Image 1 (cartoon, helix red, strand yellow):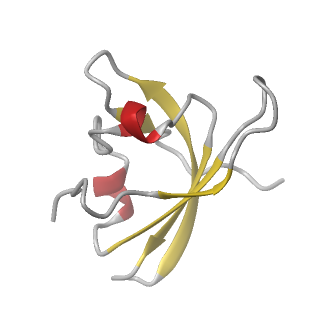
Image 2 (cartoon, rainbow, N blue to C red; image 1 turned 45 degrees about the horizontal axis):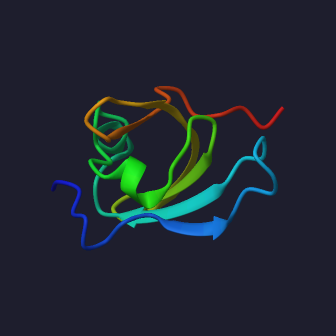
Image 3 (cartoon, helix red, strand yellow; image 1 turned 180 degrees about the vertical axis):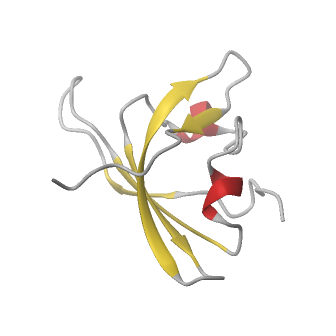
Length: 89
């Protein structure tokens, strides 16, 4: 299954100030590996995603929740998540 701009991540917490990070939530039947593929969020820039933003990914197929961050915003506007889940320690 591919990402659809009709069901984008939802902004839970906007950044406070220019240095703050935003928190996003995304629910999908896609595997975590699929979501971490390069350019998965094809409209990341239009959504307002920024490098360093936190993204909670709820995988409905497992079910499981993964915590990632936006690693890169690409020239075409897509956003890449980090390849390894963020550590809580």
